[in-house]
Amino acid sequence: MPPNVAYGYFGPLTRVAVARWQTANGITPAVGYFGPISRAAIVTETNTPSNLSPSTEIDTPAALGMRANQVMLFRAFPFEVRSGDVISLDGSGFSKTINKIYFNDSNPVDATSTDGITLDVRVPLILSEGEYSLSVSNTLGSSNNPDIAIAIKVMNNPRSGPIIENASIVGDTVTLTGSGFTSANNIITTLGNSSGPISSDGVTLTFRITELSMYNEIRRFTLGNYKVAFWIYVENEHGANKEPYKLEIMI
Amino acid sequence: MKKKQFIVTAFSLILIGLFLPISSARALITEDPFGGIVSTSIRCTCSAGNRWIWFTPLYLGGPVVIAGPLIYSSFSTTLYADLNIAVSGKWHIGDYRPGRACWIRVRWFCLPLPSLGLMTKVGTN
Image (cartoon, rainbow over all chains, first blue to last red; front, side, top):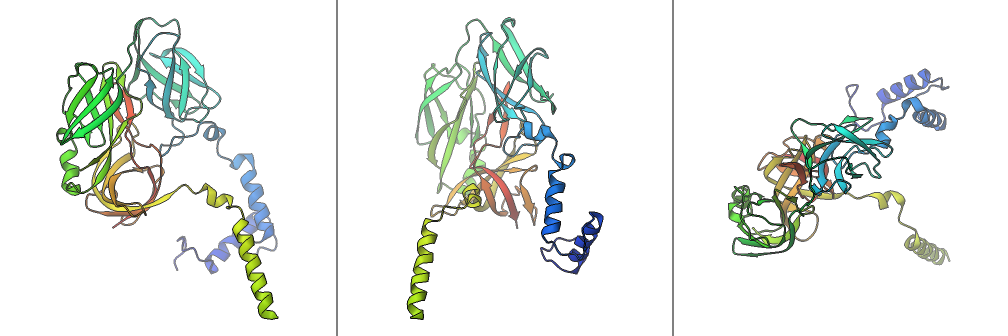
């Protein structure tokens, strides 16, 4: 077997490597077998502060599947708020001890996160009406990303974003009932997005799943034989529903 | 006499085994197996490096065969041969952990695009 390849087999090459490590760590006899003395040495070595991960990794847990050691901001909810309201931030790499949340790169507010992925912060009373881009800074750096601007709108009379209370499907037509729908709503689903804004009377919203951007691409594999979870968001100028509405459909 | 002793011992071991607590290692396992063929995929525009992959069919180890999405993360999914991740028509097999891991860009914010979970390891043909 060639050296430096992990076969999961303890052979002569591994034994020589262990012996070399034992010699380097003052373990005698350096015979190449991993016994209680070597085990104690490993435990001591891995518990030495210089070999621990930086404390920032423990203080700033990453969200599932996200890059560690990077602070990321995905969403502030709700979108429209009054100054003084509490908003909830979703992201990754938030610190459990200290984060600074900036509104248009100024008016920093301190906040802590219990889980590294959510953060509650009060909008400063000093903010006047307008749209504010948010960023989070901590020991990992800043969440600022030129491609993704996470914003809130400070208003004296904020409106709630869309809320889906019920959904039904007849043929390929989906009807949503709820509140906060406007004259221009975008549909975002697990079968793709609507091709353009869809009008609503405020409480009902109708669209066709066959017109969603990924419907045909997925349907050519499923051929109408599969029951799938169809998750729906409605987004408009006042925000989007925080959690998707789930509908079981055949596709 | 020896036969009787054997039966008593075996019965005692079975009883002890029945009342042993589930080991902590087993209780911590939250991964489930999956296998399926890729239909299509999209890039998670807010969580760069992650990919939302739709499978048809998707086998999750139960009696019902479904179709649906899982997430591949270049930061936390261990990828095995033949490395054809998200290639349409390729079989994928591995483990996944339930949870949200794909965020997509929508005007002033990002939305978590639902899926069955994050692949922790995956191999492809």
